[in-house]
Length: 316
Image 1: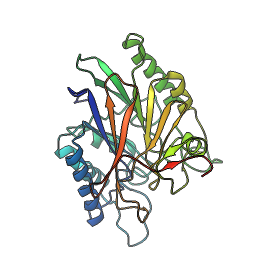
Image 2 (image 1 turned 120 degrees about the vertical axis):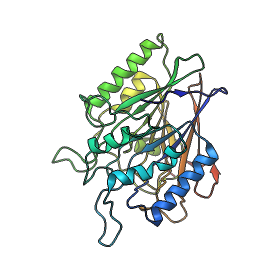
Image 3 (image 1 turned 90 degrees about the vertical axis):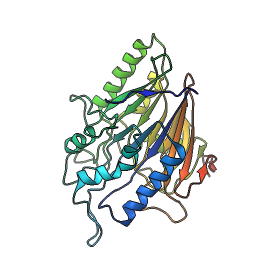
């Protein structure tokens, strides 16, 4: 990791979450996506950018539609707005990043060559590519918060189970071990942590169905059909205060379940499906040193800041 992350002098740390860029060929729609990202970054001046998957799109396209023929070049173009501004950035892979043409290892090699990334390959004995943690240092030079990143995979690995992949047992074990280690290194104090992945956990459906949420749900929660227990592990470890995903382009809600705020990003890319009247944008996240809490808001393509979203109560 080339860059150390620090809380600012005012004890804040601000993250921009971009998700589902679906960059393909650098055409007009991709340039619209870049313009959005540049506008958000220039307005918000974040300390870190996190790309939560489907940065590029290597899946099936309707004949005549743009195709991602140069995926590694497409990826470099997609992260250009953060790179050229010298903003540290991290990525987790989505189901479409390496659907065809390239592997996750291919893409990770390109990621790690970029000057301003804090992404890591992660342990070889843990399922997936890109399971890693990054600490945010306080003014005293000691870790004050942690960020976890998970590879949520692609399709179910089990032939008789249809649907998306799930966070595997080795990843859950890695998280528990890492969390325990950070707890020990922090003199038995639990550091606040955030977690980022592409495909939502099953609990994203549960929180909408059972708790008061804020934001929009315009499509089904396309989570894995198997619940592998990552959320339960986070509740038990007690460090994660918020999780952030993408995948479902026209969902942007957040809700608190058992003390963890489950948040969707706001889909950023134009080269993919959306919904009329639901503009592209980014989710912003602000941590404050020493607090087990974060602020979050949306910044939309036209510069609008959305800090209050519609309330949804179960049964609405």
